[in-house]
Image (cartoon, rainbow, N blue to C red; front, side):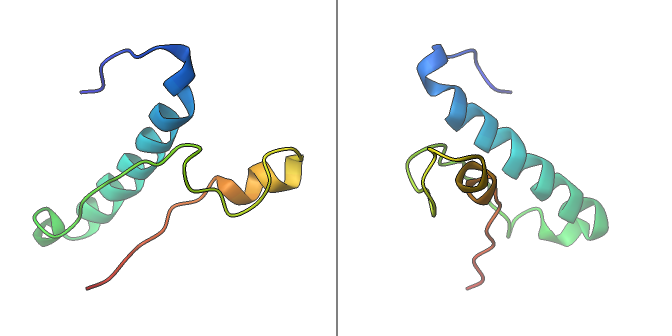
Length: 68
């Protein structure tokens, strides 16, 4: 369960909620994925585009999957 954090960490919290939702949906499709999937939220630490525009912020709201 997420613990409340200062507002400065809000983007990281939102990122974690987003990635956990995707992880949960994938596990619902295949329960064997529980041990193989890990969720990690980065918030504002790994942007792909500038957050100064709506388009840039939209590009930064993403979930990435890394396969071994």
